[in-house]
Amino acid sequence: MNRIAGRAVRMLALSIITCLFLAVSAYAAEGQLAFDTGTTTGAGLRLRSEASTEADIVTTLDSGWVLAVIDDSVDGWFEVAYEGKTGFVSGDYFQINTDNSFKSYGRVNADSVNLRSEPNTSGGVTASLSEGDVVTATSLVDGWFAVTTTYGSQGYVRSDFLDLTNSASSSSESSGSGNSSIVSTAKQYLGTRYVYGGASPSGFDCSGFTMYVYKQFGYSLPHTATGQWQSGKGARVYSISDLQPGDLVFFNDPARNAGKACSHAGIYAGNGQIIHASSSRSGGVIYSSLTSGYYNQYFIGGIHM
Image 1 (cartoon, rainbow, N blue to C red):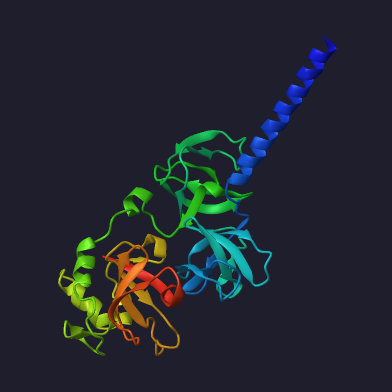
Image 2 (cartoon, helix red, strand yellow; image 1 turned 120 degrees about the vertical axis):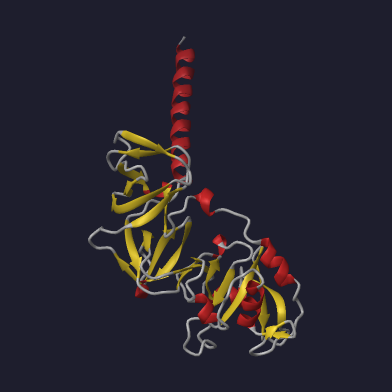
């Protein structure tokens, strides 16, 4: 009888330990909670994979965007989260929101997320949010964002279930296959030689190529990369992962921009590649990678028409 009781005690203890382990594992699998927020103060700010100006660029941010801070232990850098991505921004172009007052869109990143009346799991559930729902976040309390839904409901969402974003579009509205017709047209001119000032199939420069291709779809674009970027046409996209085939893409190499906002333009072809008129030695209209190397380093954004 004692042996049976001892075995029961041991099995109960093992069950408790297993449950605790699973609970800890589940918690570890969740994202990091934000402990602060800040606002970008410089346009074209690069979110980098590590706290170094030599690290890969995760995405490019514009001025005035609110980011969730998840770590500040590296001097001069902040580890932040934005649109489901994490990385590091320089403290030279990022200001902590010391009054904990801001306004930003937030996109729910999981299904059946509870909107609670208090910033903790003890707060009553006032609504259930679906993945892709967009809310407005206005403060951060103990790792929870104070939010208002599109239906006017107010409450708190745990910060690892909400991705701050600059777009009011839901994930379903922002998804899409892009404009494959523009890409197909651009492909027709692969191999065309590079000609400075060129804007015809006899020779293109970078903005002449994008201008020519887009003109065939009824768009009138300036014949400069900076002019196209600042034209006010379409919707700007700042993350490589948000680009769609057919989007215009822009780059800014300080050594080549002559003091302008952009030094180069091209067309996103999908699968991490661009089609563009390159002035390089092996140039002309070619494919190049956007996921690493030169064009990844100097990418500043895209335009979706």
